[in-house]
Image (cartoon, rainbow, N blue to C red; front, side, top):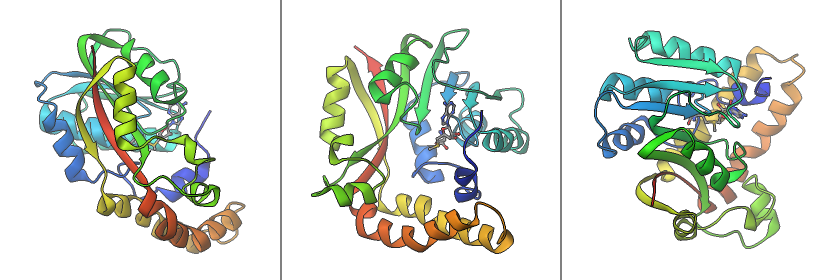
Length: 248
Ligand SMILES: C[S@@+](CC[C@H](N)C(=O)[O-])C[C@H]1O[C@@H](n2cnc3c(N)ncnc32)[C@H](O)[C@@H]1O
């Protein structure tokens, strides 16, 4: 049980595996106005940057669960680096269906749309770990501009323009599901660039070091096409944001 290696090659230099910059992540944590001691469950916690920095800067405590052995090990190193070993732990495992042993104040899942079968299922899953009145954070893509054709949608790595909603459509849908949207932190073009463009140098450096690896042809092919695709389609069409929800 592990994340395919291409993901960890592509994002080897990333601390956050999503299009939020450190500044946006910090602003999001502060915008929630939660007290020190807030208990967090982070599903698909990646390299643990959100939980570690919020533990250091805001006094939160919590657990992260992620299926990647590489990212979970990085999260463990970050815990030590930021001096939050008494507040945060990371567990390697499948977060699908994961529920906290004790109710938490804040349950989160940033990225990994497929866990919980989309955002509606994710909200239902996170809700099971929350104390009454708790907050959840869901990171989710949406269309800035709906692709006019199938080809553009595929260049954004989705199967069809119907795969995502627009921002107002997504916020409206959270409401229909019975949640108030009480905060949000959308990525912007600059933070998207930091996430996507940083992957290309990772791919190139890895290729230079590992020319004979069995993954090399896949990495070479991706590096040859992704920068143009991103500039042509994803950069103009795809949005992503973190939404803070409270059950009505
Ligand atoms: C887009 S990344 C987001 C990581 C982290 N939340 C962040 O924002 O930096 C998606 C994460 O989901 C994890 N993942 C994918 N499927 C998973 C599963 N079934 N259970 C736990 N983690 C999973 C991946 O290993 C990866 O770290």
